[in-house]
Length: 215
Image (cartoon, rainbow, N blue to C red; front, top):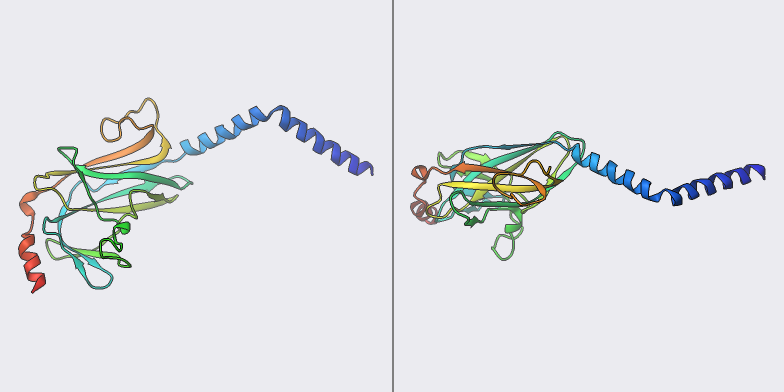
């Protein structure tokens, strides 16, 4: 009986401590979360160059060819921390004007586009080399801990596009002392961006390519 009374006394003391100090405990928990978030270290590694793509190859043997052309580049994000973190608001625009460009992603393979239940597995570059492909799921995704996330950017540029501007945010508040000079400059979240040149002189004749594939 004495043991039970002692146990109940300890529980009552602990409960009273929590009630009396809940603000301090909540602040400690918030500090722990902040420290955990600050410990996340990312390296943003854009390829820095682009290439023209003749066709995107699907898993059913079909291909995607765009009359306006397709440009490919790649970004890698290295998460060296112990925690997963998400990225979001992945956008691609013309590098010299604010025109946003549509990029291929897995969610674009749907019933509306006529590509439901299909997946892109590779592409042929201008030299007819077959390259593997890792399209993003959409404009957001997860960066796994201790891993490298490779994202292939495939866009159909405008006629006068000379460069691609790629930007994204991650779920980590940025330092007030580190305001980005470009991209999401007013966002409270940490962001990354890259400007990738597009060599129009290397653009294949897509109309001719389409004619050949249709014959």
